[in-house]
Image 1 (tube, one colour):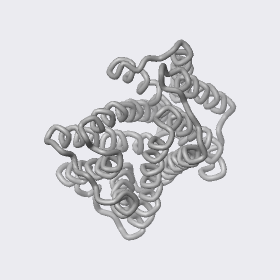
Image 2 (tube, rainbow, N blue to C red):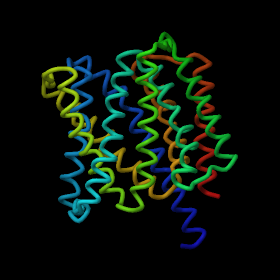
Image 3 (spheres, rainbow, N blue to C red):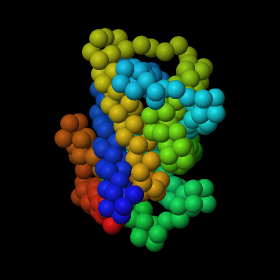
Image 4 (cartoon, rainbow, N blue to C red):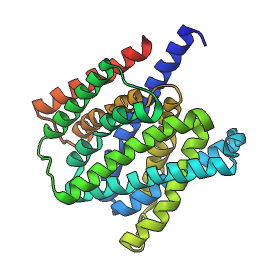
Length: 300
């Protein structure tokens, strides 16, 4: 591969990671509307990935059936390993949100880029350059400022919320590192399909056991919104992100994905009237600066 082709490959991976984070940023808007329509959080936590993986399986079965063929080793590594990481993340994220709310959960969740940068060297041999470490610090500062600067939504911490939030961050970092390991070996399609399917199996067992029988969406409108939620934020976003992990380093993809809280804050301001104080807008500027810095690095 020529130097220019390699540079274009990295840039494409960066853009895919940012696009995935923008889709994930819409999750709060979808979730709030579903909750208002009578769909409980545990139902959303389970049915969202189920809908997403259904779209992936049907889409690839029609367009590229070879992507669904996997040997026993692939199923074991991707379905079990990736499924555990994704499934634990889904549970931890919902339980943290329930315990301490969205702002605190987001603040804790985006410790993940620091974990990825620290672990990608010894685990993947991708030792971060000093510039990347500085971008992580800049981005994390921006995330925390944007969370603390949300009007009328104070960040609160407690033992339970802290535990679930940190578990969400660790599991998010784990499936980023896993995706960087698995995607070049098995392809982005198999990695995202079978890791998401493995997560669904785990959630089908654990969620009803923890919460009791599921409450299904009460109306056709709620079902349509849930289907759109799963299709966009699981099927499309996960495929983009795992494909990005086949093109750029795990640490770069993780920092690029930190665009999510900044975009989410802007969407909440515009669509849910949840404004930001000046401190929050300063945080968004820092997040954007960090993400752009990763993009400049990808082009160099």
